[in-house]
Image 1 (spheres, helix red, strand yellow):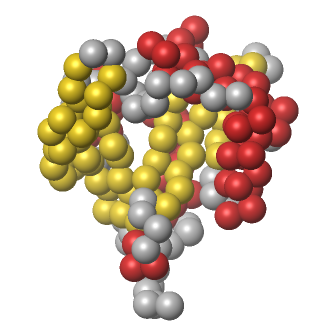
Image 2 (tube, rainbow, N blue to C red):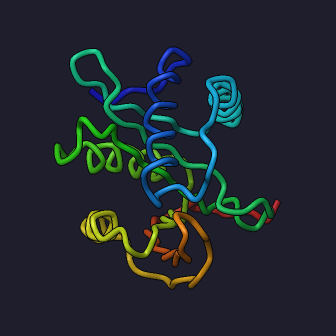
Length: 170
C-alpha cells in the first residue's frame, strides 16, 4: 500500500536513510542523521505541501519517495528533485518503481514541468529504473563528490511533464 507518510514513520525512514548514508553512494553524506533531524525534515515537507509517500508492506514501511525544490531560485519553481529509497530487506520487489509511479502522478497534478533525478553514475540499477520510467540522461558532473576514499560522478536524468497550463513568473 502506498500512502502519505506520518510522523510515526520517521524512525523507519531514518533507518533506511542512514543505511544509505553509511553503505552506499546514493546519498553524498558522511554522518548519520538523528530522529530529531528527520522529524524536522518531515515537518518542513508537510508545511511546504511536498509529497512524502511510503510503501507499507504487512504494516511496515518498506520504502519511501519524496520530492522538493530543485534549486531555491523562483524561476525553478516548476522543477523538482526527487528521492526514492527502499529498505534493504525489501530490495528487488518493485517497490521503488511503484513509489515513483505515485510520485510522478502527484507531480503531474501539481504543476511540475520537470522532475530531476541526481544519481551516482555507478548506480546502474537506478539509471535503468529511471530510464524505464521515461527519464532521459541530461549530463554528468564528474568528481562532484568524495566518499569512501574516492571521487564520485553525479549523473542527472530528467522527466518532462506537461507542467502548468499558464506558468507565471511570480
